[in-house]
Length: 254
Image (cartoon, rainbow, N blue to C red; front, side, top):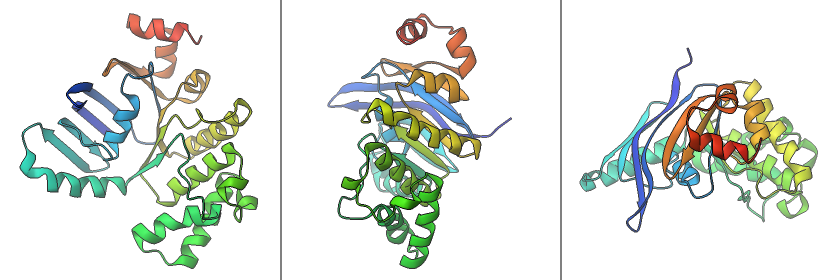
């Protein structure tokens, strides 16, 4: 059985007193493609931001690749320690956003090379050589000199995936990676993610692309109203979900 690369227990997060995550329990297996689905506003994106330390949660525990963030709602004196561990954790976690977040003044090559140079101190020539290999992996080796404005949306998102890979993360998190793309460009990004899955790279994906979720995911996690309703193998969730909320959600797509 695969090890759990991510384990989340009792995770709670609120904004201005309004609970968004109400006690999340889930796990992600090493070398798996796990897809997180659920209605808009149920807390999926907030969960991803808690997993990579962008958001500070109030209660619960998050363990990723040997690093653990632990909060009990009252340990304010441990905020500095929390932030230190969150910084270490982010070095293990790649993040791909729906809005690409590329630097507009840098070429595709330098967008990919820049994070390892700054965060890990890799020399520029070595970082650029590695960056070219990651661009090749996502099919952009011939676009390396172009700036983001000269790339299509699908190409920009593939460059963002290459940038995440350049940090050699233990897992890549995707927050609606195709939602900003024209329908004709969606498949080129999803195909890259499938290829990475075949290479054993652990991926956790928030998406509304149900056909992709059904065809590519090893496991599905369904969220509703700030809670994980059910999780399990993709074929089981899609063919025989155990919760009525999951059935109602999937009826709109299948």
